[in-house]
Image (cartoon, rainbow, N blue to C red):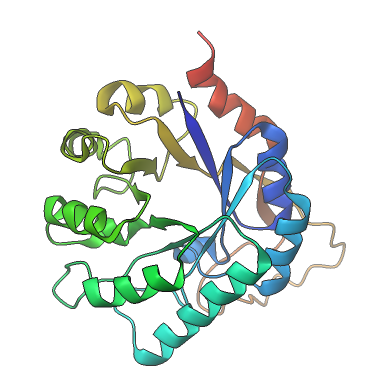
Length: 248
């Protein structure tokens, strides 16, 4: 009845997702920025090591908005082709116009390039000006699913719109609820919306093995990041979250 996707920031997180029983991973880099396309090396390793969990890869050349230049579009097309050659199961992308609508011509180009792969329209959906129209546009494109938090910071906060969109979709496309999904709210989101696919990270912070630590320098410049505590998905966290829906 349910399908669980892990937002994985590394091969290590992919393997933990598989061990924890996830059906699918979305492999990303730069999760604090909303996720960008991971390195080819990460994609290849994930493809080699994931045997029971499907591998989807985000196609997003940079952080920020979803209005792309011609140079960025070319990068996205190359990344889709590399993912195809690597044997991934699906790709994840989304493109908008300056006015906040779905960029239909560009999406058709990317859909054509992704033929044969499963396609998820990502949370660019949550930045659209008219989510109900956007839903119909994405259905028309032939995407398999939409990752959304109901245009709110978290899926729990967006349950009202998620419920309305689930009814509007009427089985024509899958809604994948994501952002802030955790063991304490996943059952409520399902019961209030009827959604049965969930996207979450199930991460915990892990202490770095570095003994010498220079606290005066940050690799993020003005962005404060603790480089000595690294977030990774854990199998136990995945199992615990899944268990909230699959056990009585």
